[in-house]
Structure formats: structure tokens, C-alpha cells
Image 1: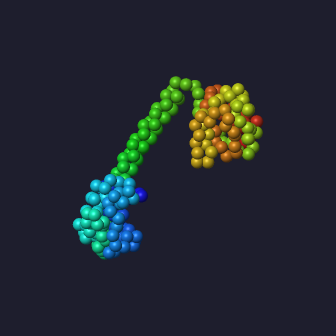
Image 2: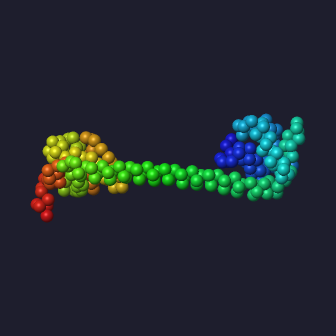
Length: 213
């Protein structure tokens, strides 16, 4: 049986037992099975059960007598036990989770910044040391290659350009490979030299930018 995550296991078991008393699963003036049975139910050691029952005994929720089982004394006391301990347990767990998430977010933000700086550095060096140009071209319904794969139309052979990514809706796919299929609404990102925009545009639309205007 699973108990609430967070906090010491025996405290969570005590909370679970108190909750069962309040809900009527364990009834007042009845006896709960001994520690060994509870240990099997919660899949913990008898010592853990002993510590859980000791917490309940401190607030007169139950009474434990060796060899006689565990007697339920008061539903009201069980409610008070939950009120006293539940918020502390859950707030402590939530606090730990928040701190952990904040730390993860910081690590993620740092990683994003590092990669963003790398991209900017790459772009700067790319512009300075190479003759290649990175461009974007939208694919619409007039495009002659819609529904075809990039290797099927021999894209590189025809344009001298390499497709490095495409954007489809909110998704950006890097290095789509030779089996990418052109779809209307896509924005393709290509890299090349010597009037690469005109070459790619003319090829996929079979017209020049001037003619389109």
C-alpha cells in the first residue's frame, strides 16, 4: 500500500491510519490488527509501524498493548492529529519541490544561455569567414514540389544549397534529412552561396522572385 510521499515514512503511515479512522475504515472502539499485519499492509518493517503507532498514542488516537492489538480510542483525536501534522508534512514537501524546481529551472536557463551564446558566436564567425548565406523560404500552395521528398527532387544538385532545418507550425526540426517531404505552410531554412535565395526560389516555384511580383 502506498502512503503520502515526502517526510518520514512512519509519519506518513500515522497520517494514513488517522485518515482511515476518520473515514470509518478503522472504527472507534475496535481493534486494528497487530504491528506485523500493518507492516505487511504498508510493506515496511514492524519498527516503522511501532514508531507510527507511538505518534498516534501521544495524541490519544489509539492505544497499543503488546499481544492485544491496537485499540482505536477517538475519531476526534484522529482529526486533531491530521490537522496538526498534515499541513506541516505537505508544506515541507511542497517547499522542497519548489526549491528543486527553481534549481532545475536555473540550470535549464543557464544551459539555454550557454547554447544561445554558442549560436550567436557561430553565426558571427560564420558570417566573417565563409561566403555562405543562411536564408528562409516559405512553401505555399504554388510550390511545384509539395508532397515530394528532398532527395526525390535532387534539391542539392539543382540549387547547390543544403536544407538545414524547417519550421512547421510551432515545431522547428533541425537536420531533417533526405526524406523530408515538402508541405504547404512550411518554412525551409537553407544554406548556400552565390544568390542562393534566387536559386532555391526559382527551383521550388519554377519562377523568379521578379516574375512572382
